[in-house]
Length: 230
Image (cartoon, rainbow, N blue to C red; front, top):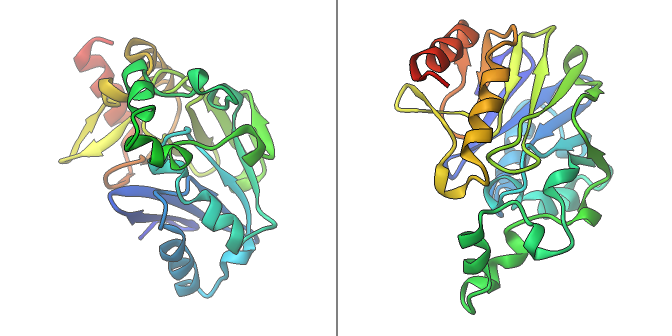
């Protein structure tokens, strides 16, 4: 769907991928493995080509947001990939999953899925630290919002009053919900990140899961934070 002019949300297997349609294309997250054909189909429906993707930004290094990256890179080999440095590790102990999940990845059957569960440093062209301003959407601010993962980021366009938040917040059953504690590395830190986001001036919100919020999103998030006393 088109969220606001030039901003589209593609949902596949309950995971959202955000597409910025400008002179060049920008993609935020890549969904599960198998999402790339759906993304390419949607881009084609707009009269554009997946090969026009110039930048793929990863909000956090979890399998439902990075699983489709390898397939996308085959379709759009010229695209650069950007992700926060704190979510990248060559050592599995440093992966952005809580301890119990890392243990699960070592089980014989589950270990077969390990290559799909995260991207590696060599998969990333631009290592972000937070505070960068990227070219899309009139200047896209990278905001480091640790807690769900150490390197979770949100992307803020002041010009469009748009905030893309990955999984630090989601919109389920017409209500804002925090990230799942079970798959967050530090839930309290995540809530501190949400409090910082609530101070931004935005009206439109795209989350990793659930429908986008168009108009009044910033006020809703501020009310949600106040109600829960975070």
